[in-house]
Image (cartoon, rainbow, N blue to C red; front, side, top):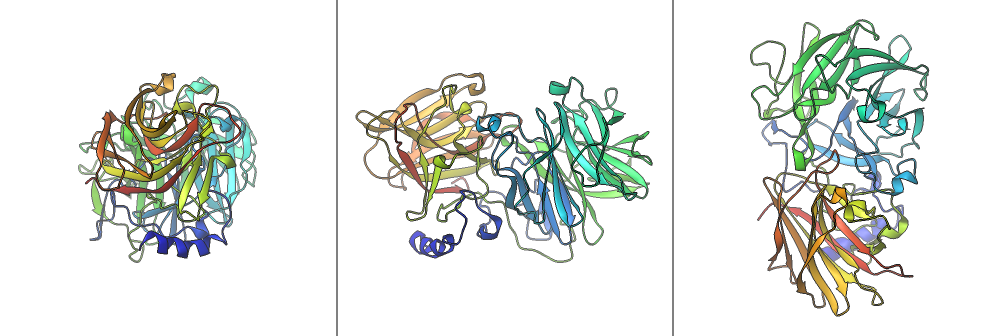
Length: 551
């Protein structure tokens, strides 16, 4: 379908939509299937990871015939992404529970590694609940009748530093509990699991809490607990041993306060999947049990795997137990879950044509956004980013809130965007372009100078330590659109290129190896900045942003 025809159709839809920049689930168009990663093999089998993107610390539930997944989002906004699936293999983003992150002023600045840590999603009395920790402020809860939103404003159920990874349990005796862990960086203690009582509504803690398991001797770096009840036992699923080197632990007791027996139910074994742990136990309508967890893939982030799960002597076994010792190891490929019927292939949104009044749900800012950062220019079918004044404290893009980013979608992929740049003729050094963001980053951008616009390639090594960008001119640009491209290959190797006609692409700059962010993988995105205070800005019109297979 050509772009003009598509734009005409979608403009009629846009008139009825909210004018918020981010898409609302009800109006979100059907996402095209990814060109770079599909977990569904189409023959009744699937391959891991089911989400080859950085959805760290996943938690999931089933409600009726639907599965919902939530993940950590740290300082990225909108935060707390909600994904939906019918079969645990095919997922799509349907919304976010956190449109702005409290405290609002605090998160108006970049807060790398802070904000939303490991959340838990539950369904109780016809409402969805998400409990999430902010290690600097405390534990919050937000609720919704529809998982796609809207979600309530977060309520701080207990203030304090270092309280992390909460998960509630509405017990069959009418009591409500919250299991959680501690962040050593804030609390001065870690590797322990504790339980608090909650009020009936689950909106307020009622006591100081009780430590129910100490992992210092056998299970260091114990965190991320999820609590369940089955056959009269309380089960706490928790990762231990470190993100990339650990194992999946399960604790079991007939009393919520213990004493708890321990068992390692999954580790790497002889597989290539390191540190397989932290996630969610879910059951299908047909009675099968499955476990969703993450694997740390460094610059690619913490990707989500799906493992078969069974029960043996009232203990779970996750993955494939080849030697029958009760401890499984991850699978690379397996038969899809039996959910009663077959469902079509779907994947999270990646590309964006910018033809509606709403950004795709895959996009997130580096801080709580302002209305003046972006405009969905429906008449032109483009995303307009206005050149924002760099914060006084910003040493480089690491400190800039108005960088619009999304996750790496696979190990190998190619990103191309088409943009037109209109600088403010009264000033120099407005800049707009494409960036691979991490603790070190690289970008290809258009920059305004006295004698015109230039294409510049920049690298900032150790950006998180406040180091300055190193910039080189590539070419002086003429009038018309510019096409920017970055190709990512195995090892997170990134090669930038550009074109003035969309056909012939020329290399720009040296190869760059993408780096991790703070607790996250590298991201890819767009930005538009200036370093001069003035009464108006220039802008960049991004016509589209496309994720394709490496050519």
